[in-house]
Image 1 (cartoon, rainbow, N blue to C red):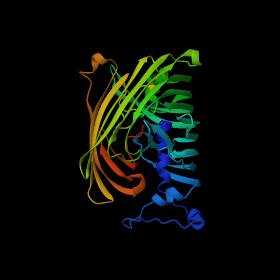
Image 2: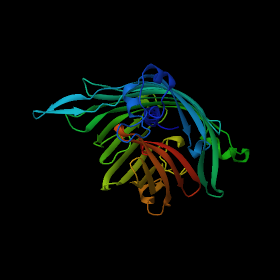
Image 3: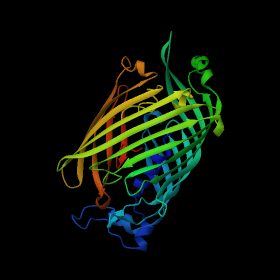
Image 4: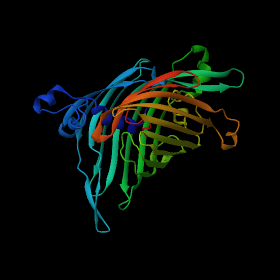
Length: 386
């Protein structure tokens, strides 16, 4: 399953692709940019509002490589709020409030339903995310056995997730701090080769995970969709404990940084550093894994992982760009095993179109190759979505 913050960002940016006939009839909205006359949805985004059914294509290899989702959404645009800093007026942009649902189905018969809301409490300067749903996921996990070597174990995971996150702005800075809570009820059964059933039996169970932890974040990127400059830094520590009603006692730490800079007028560089650490004994489906383009989700797991990914965007003309990217990472059980652990590499290329100039939103397609397979991705804004 993808985290709910990804679903929320997909939802926001997918909306920018859809100009419905109903809204066009209510109000004449230009779908061309006033500067260059090219196809552009900026004015539609600014002027249109209300309920919109958003389509989305799922391309995650671990979910069958192809699928579709329909995300009915209501978006409420928020004006920036005004702060006074040392006698100077400061306008702070505010993300739109998003309320909606999601229904999805993929080629390997995974399906899910969800509802969510993301918004900002303006007076208290608090950003929040709340969501819940039901999913029936078919996914493979890989384990290495002493005599048999590496084996693919296929599971069916029925899950009821719920998430609540709230972060408050610290003073007039770009820093936020708050909490995150996750509830996850799962029923897991083996769905693979019957000759491997005895190996998978210890991994079949029903459980409840209840986690609570702290979040700290810095975000001074020039926009949330396709940044040209700035940094996003995020660290969270989440505890699962029977005090919260969980069947498991473990910690999970996630830290990542996205950095963007203009190398030349039309060449943008990006760097991502991402790491996760599980402490104690989490269930196998909550272990960290290498999450990069070209690498199937959960393919390379361990108690910890760390990766680095770089990308270049060349804006060859005003609307069109080409991408090149590559990265490497390791998944391992102990930091003492970091050295001998295998490096996992991936890389690829892509193309982008500037769909909404006033929002600096670019969309396109990436093609990537990892150690095991080719994969393709439809990208809205940035591929780095946490």
